[in-house]
Length: 155
Ligand code: 4NP
Image 1: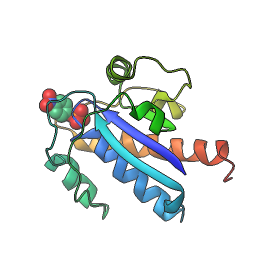
Image 2: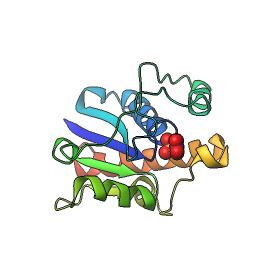
Image 3: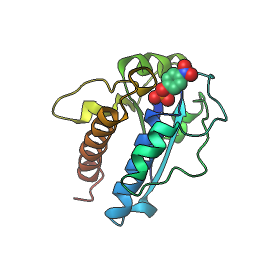
Image 4: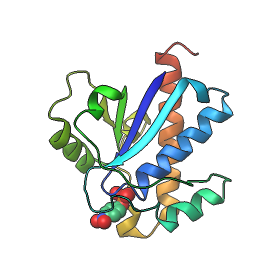
């Protein structure tokens, strides 16, 4: 079982988008049973709140539901429980490190570090642009899936 945790600031826009896009990609590869995929926030701001309507509406265009997801905060012990902990932007990496303390197993990266063009994913909470964020999340999840299928011996 490959355990993946996506992390952003609030866990209502970008990291749940990545969580449900990634679940959709592994389902399409018929590999859902090989993965445990979740998402969390570095801040406590939105704990318990549902996914932002901007993310919900964008994913609905692709037939992807986020039903049942509420924001949770990253915990120190999540470091042991996950194989990959992926932030959306450099600021999230700093927030993750504040909570988990250190990264001896090199589990912590930005999602788009897996793309040929490594970069931050803009926060649509501030930009209002869920289209740009979706395109970046999709590119990152596809690149990450290709990389782990190779690394974990599926391909
Ligand atoms: P996210 O967006 O990190 O992509 O979920 C945000 C959502 C809420 C807040 C900030 C960013 N907030 O400050 O409440």
